[in-house]
Length: 199
Image 1 (cartoon, rainbow, N blue to C red):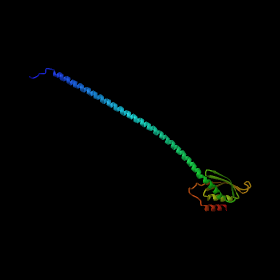
Image 2 (image 1 turned 60 degrees about the horizontal axis):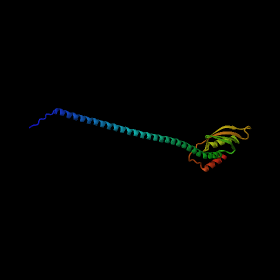
Image 3 (image 1 turned 90 degrees about the horizontal axis):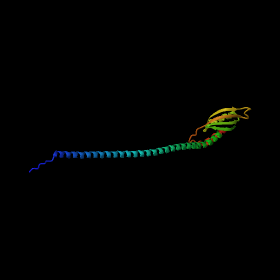
Image 4 (image 1 turned 120 degrees about the horizontal axis):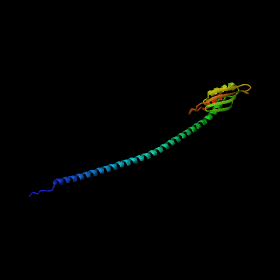
């Protein structure tokens, strides 16, 4: 005998569908909440990582700034040391120049000329002296002009007569030549020039 379902099947279907809809809706809300939470956590994690990177970069930049300051200080110290070394090298190179100057003064000074004072200002020399005659002063100027150390003789004052005493008093200026590296005058040439100057 066939069974007849007398229950309200439409209402039951409606309730079942409603229940399924509510379950699906709850699942969607839960899934959306989980996605939102996961996105929030991910974004916060990325922000924290970026903050850590920024802090690391700031620390590295601060270290680099300190290193740059130290480099600048070392560069300034290096510049001061180089300046001192240049001063020392200048003094060292000028030491033999003084010896050469006195040697050249003896070589260029002709007989009958006597120096009373020698003054140096930079590379300019001032000779004050007494000569037996103005001809001797001219010979002195020629010797200076032919010298390897001295150049540009310039006679400023020459006094002869009773007021000047015996001989002629003179004031003569000359320039010190710039030293040439590696240039040495042979001893034979120097001795020959000294003997010529004395004659």
